[in-house]
Image 1 (cartoon, rainbow, N blue to C red):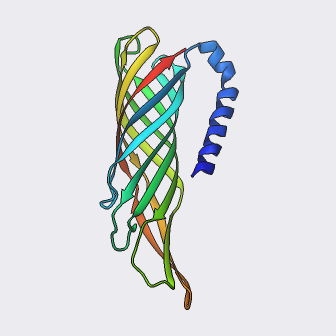
Image 2 (image 1 turned 135 degrees about the vertical axis):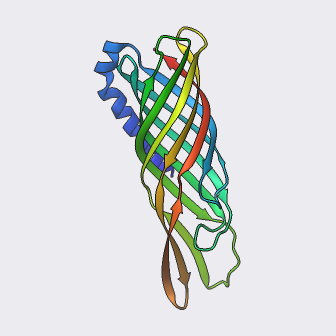
Image 3 (image 1 turned 90 degrees about the vertical axis):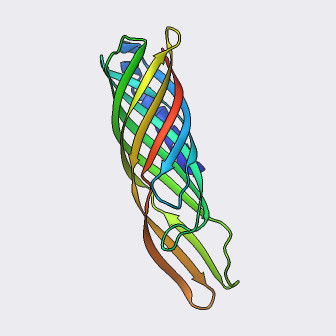
Length: 207
């Protein structure tokens, strides 16, 4: 997971530098950070604390493009044919279009939609088995789409608080890998619904 995060940070750095001529012209780059909660739709995955950061570039008077990286994890409960008990980690990297209704007001509601890529990892927790047999599970990384609504509230000239509610859609393939010292390795495939409702609060600063 840390290796994937490092790649994302490098991508953010490159995008920022490639975008610098545009930023210099519009003078309205914003950076943001947020925290909240993610509610996955899969029944055996409880809600988890979500945190993230990113930056936004204006495309037009009421339209912005946001680059956002976030992270959350959850301690799963065992379910037959699905994930076992263990720790699930999610690291979405998202590009989002934000449309503001009232750009100049101190309260600005907006709509958002976008897409991105989700890095996922899973570590099986404790389980009961004979010593000759071990279990591990993998979840494939892959694309996701999202949509939602939000509101910003001006605190001072360039500092805003914001709240967002969004739905992230992601269906992923999973594998259960059973290793038996006597019989060899058996792989069983399953699907996992990683779609989640995400609610968070944050702060955004405009340069």
